[in-house]
Amino acid sequence: MADSYNGVPIPRDGARIAYKEDRCQVPPNPIIPYIEGDGTGRDIWKAAVRVFDAAVERAYRGERRVVWYEIFAGEKAKAKFNDWLPQDSVEAIRDFRVAIKGPLTTPVGGGIRSLNVTLRQVLDLYACVRPVKYYKGTPSPVRHPERMDVVIFRENTEDVYAGIEWEQGSKEASKLIDFINREMLKGGKKQVRADSGVGIKPISVFATKRLARMAIRHALENRRKTVTLVHKGNIQKFTEGAFRKWGYELASEEFRNQIVTERESWILDNKDKNPNLSSEDNGALIEPGLEYAPEEFRSSVYQEVRSVLESIYRSHGHGEWKNKLMVNDRIADSIFQQVVTRPDEYAVLATPNLNGDYISDACAAQVGGLGIAPGANIGDGYAVFEATHGTAPKYADRDVINPGSVMLSGVMMFRYLGWGEVADLIENGLERTIEQKTVTYDFHRLMEGATKVTTSQFANHIIHNMGARVLVNA
Ligand code: NAP
Image 1 (spheres, helix red, strand yellow):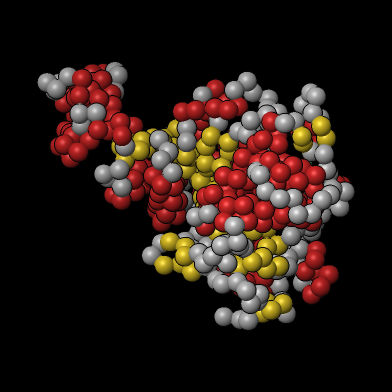
Image 2 (image 1 turned 120 degrees about the vertical axis):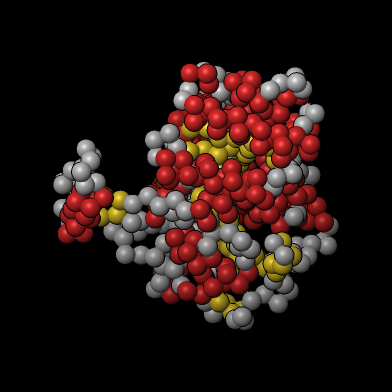
């Protein structure tokens, strides 16, 4: 490993985070690389790092502390090294394993390596994780925003985001369309129109299962009640439908004793309520209208009932299933309604890439929007935490923007490191400050009787509200 990155020596007073047996091993003085970010990134990072340090100090009284290590990307890297994304910055994140970043300018016109895409590939950060919960006092467009408390695990490496697509009119598009029409759809009624652009949507067993595994582990470790597989499998059977199927497979292959699927819970519940129920009658209860279905389908349902009862009634029956993590699934369009009408029925959502992109923003909009929406890209042993919004350049260096998003990304980071006390302090300080109606401009314009403060004053209030010393006054 290098002793400096981008010519900046590694701090001598910190130690590296290690990773063994699926767990991060965090020293009391971990070196954590950070990228300040462009535009308002500068404002929010300055405010956030004071809050982080104050919370760590308050929680551990000097026994633990983060040794921050600046690395460069975006405008600052371009100015210093004439490189938007120096290789050293990527390597520092790989070597130190955990990093936090502000938003970066994406120069218009392309041709620039994107940090997020590069890191996703180099470190295989296969899950985009977005917790969405309500902090009291936050302005919201819904009547009961407090009912929302979900964590979304969005698959990060495939689906229509794989970037495998060809422009309408290109040689490649014509070649592919020709092949599909002549070879794959030959003799059928379907044909792809010759003037189409085409894209490929790969969804693999491997990527689906590791994403489902991470979501289920998170739910178990945090005692959440459900994991919901979100998909559009009624239409896209072999991609989205397969995501659902492989998600369930993974759940029962690897977590059999700790989980129950929703369908299994119906079968077990029917049996609990009526121990003498036949498999046929049990099947009829879980599949209304079964008596009119083709013989083959009916037999498959009866077989399913028998197999569930034989394999898990002993461990999951007599109400035991109620203590297990429920794994269910919802079709994407219905989950969009449900997160508005009954958000409290959901805790962890596992989704393919595109659905996850949409549903994260739809959920975040209910509880305060971009200004306080945190996120992380996580792989096995690597994690990069980041504000989910952009650089909001018109507010840059004006000390007005809401730093909540990067602060809550820090909350995620501290939980990931196992420093839950720090995360709690930051969350409580933030919530109390919003409850006191002391807020930045974005919340101020949506709240009555609120006091508008600057980014740095907002940080001071949070620090004060967590009971720590405010070290730098705005
Ligand atoms: P944006 O920077 O997210 O800002 C759009 C609007 O969202 C702002 O004008 C502001 O709305 C609101 N907003 C964003 N962050 C806020 C915060 N912390 N507090 C309060 N309000 C906030 O989106 P953009 O203007 O489309 O993108 C600007 C640049 O950021 C582009 O170069 C883009 O490529 C880049 N970008 C980077 C990332 C990343 O690095 N992860 C992500 C997205 C975009 P009001 O004007 O209504 O106050």
